[in-house]
Image (tube, rainbow, N blue to C red; front, side, top):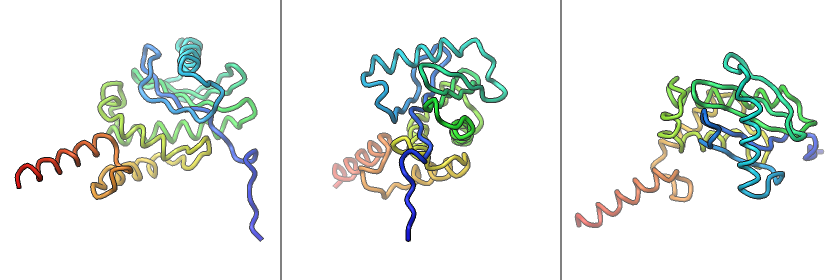
Length: 183
């Protein structure tokens, strides 16, 4: 007889944020309807950034509470990593998700974790977010496994257009257009 876990038994993530040194978005993903509009999301990002910017979360992750949410965060160079869960979530799970995200980004950016490099590889970071959490449910927390999945997905040029990143889809379209013009 199979045993199924209820939704309440699974830890859920409300959002994962990657902000720059001014509190502006680099990559964000929301899994909760707590912030229904884009302006509510931006206001939350501003309040979380304002609350945490004066702390020293460079060596290890810090934890804070804001608006009945637990937020685990870490700063590296000019990037600010945040993972948000409900006030009843386990901080260790949130910290593990944060560390997995940070480790995967570090591997994919080849230890050059800074805003410019992150923006140049935004497709990889967004794929990381998709590999870590789906619909708020944690799928993977090991940074090397996440980075490996993203790297192999990035190398898969034979994938259908619906499964390719925007840059891959544009490259594929450009290649097909070139072939059709040369015939």
